[in-house]
Amino acid sequence: MSAPEPITLVEILSVHGDFDSCAELARAAVARLERVGVRSLRSVNFFTRPDSNEIGAVLEFADGRELIAHMNQISGWDEFKRLAERIKLKEMRVHGRIPLEAEAWMRQFGDDITHYGSFVAGFHR
Image 1 (cartoon, one colour):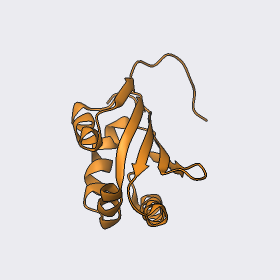
Image 2 (cartoon, one colour; image 1 turned 60 degrees about the vertical axis):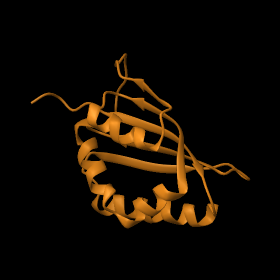
Image 3 (cartoon, rainbow, N blue to C red; image 1 turned 180 degrees about the vertical axis):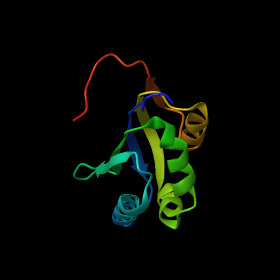
Image 4 (tube, helix red, strand yellow; image 1 turned 45 degrees about the vertical axis):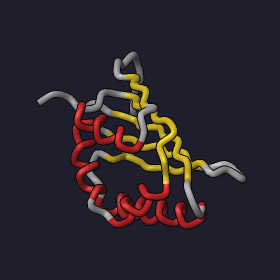
């Protein structure tokens, strides 16, 4: 078995409709991910700016091979479905290698996806 390959997803999401209800859905999804998300999901963080209709999301996985399992898991969640109805992917940066199937799934939310798939240097504590 090959060594785990970490990946980080950095997303800019445009919120359509009520920002506060969208933020509440994001909090509910994060709480559920923390309880029952795939094991290699290290962290999920959402950020915004005052008076903005955008949310920034940063997801870190210890092993990108679990990305498909993550996507299959959340696709059935009501929290995710309702959140996905209220956002549009404006931009995504993928740091690390991801399976082609994962990229195809991500593109349903938008096409502005940039990959940085060739590792140069780094460490994890």
